[in-house]
Image (cartoon, rainbow, N blue to C red; front, side, top):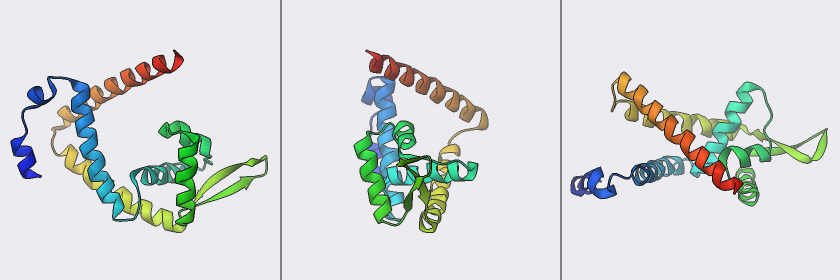
Length: 164
């Protein structure tokens, strides 16, 4: 990896100053690293993210249904169904009918999933520490502000595109 970085041109030369290309490149590298870290627990990154979402909802005392996973992660129904079925087969979650509507099933974490989610939490926490160590506190706050602006713009563009 060191050699690849040493041979790399500046961001300006490599991406022509195009912020989207820079963000996509960094995102790809983060995803590769995250996928590698999650594979040690036998998880894919989306499975890990779903576990985290379910754990957070569990801590808030609220139920989560497939529709929420589709919306939060912007994934098609068929893909979410497939991921949830795989997670169910792995013993990571249980789908339980709710009395109000037998067609809807809430997603419940198993103890194994909670254990894996703790491992994921620590792996992600370590990655976060490494990223934060690159910045002063002031720089980090600016970084978050920039990322929020970019995210708002991307969502705005996405919504505009979706409504056309």
